[in-house]
Image (cartoon, rainbow, N blue to C red; front, side):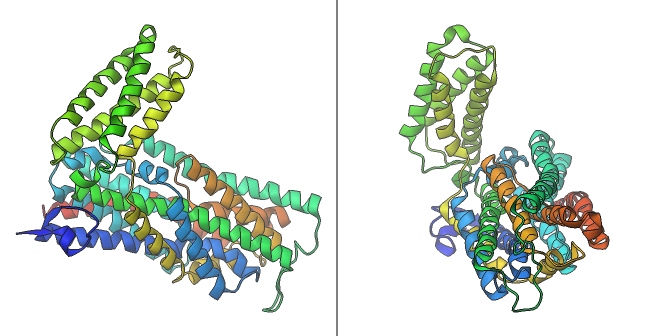
Length: 471
């Protein structure tokens, strides 16, 4: 029996149908991604409020909802570049032309592996990267997919870029925190700024309090704009895996707009015939094929959605190849025209409906308000051997907000946990050398960081193989 999904659950999805058994699995997957983002809220966002709570700049009852609100806004306003980067890790196009059950196996494996590891590290109060967990789970499920179905499997080039971002960000955070703290010590020299609060009534002066609240706000917002996008990517993975015709391409982009971008690109090719290369030929062929697809019947089956999505992606890849080829000299203004056309065409495949962003925003924001204390205690009390000073708290959060914001701008996922923890460690070292660090806590954090990726890969791979037994 077929159940009309739009009539049962999501009236804003359009006319789609799923069978009874698949509908149940679909609902479980949607619930699981909401749970993942909820856990991410109290697991990772605790980093943002730790400094304002332990410097007495804000009380927990105020700081936690405040951070949750700014996380909500961060997801809502942060775009989808990081989300689309996450999706490129998995063989998404291949999933579209296989039975829905295969996509369900991949989605469930990724989500359950991520949630299990996140909850485990949270329970023991260990700051651990949700980004590493999710990316490892995606790699593991993709390896399982390749084992059974062959094909591209893991996008190792994308994994390398993301991995480099995740590895370098804590090192950058540590180094910048040391430099900023040294600058404050030798240039600002404010006794109030370096004060270590004692007792419940020892609160920072108004200007320092405003500084700490501002840095907490920035970290919360940028955490939402980066980590929240990972949840958006996961939810879009579910939508495309289960409902490829509806969500593999953005049906809200008018056909006329796509044709206008194609015509602009064709004109550039015609004006630069002498500079032609194999990329020109392939791009021209893809444009012709896309026009043929647009002139035919609407996209109503998986094969057509798969073909149209691949054509759009191929055109963008060839445009990038032309722009990056130093041997191709385009006429004045043509590179900008190609960039505009590529940007418009990218909106056909790189998108997330507003309701997807809204669900993740609410989940992350609510998660921030619950279960935050375990991680906050570790960040505030156990990384260093002394209580956080105002300067140390501000330094760590300025560095974290800057690093996360820049990473979001470049469309790269980064670990809030890694950056902020390393920022606090850097500020502690700059204040009094390595003796200021709590070696036991740092060893636990380092062990969790080292184990997260391989554990998530293996767990997700095993879960994919287990679920595959029931197909």
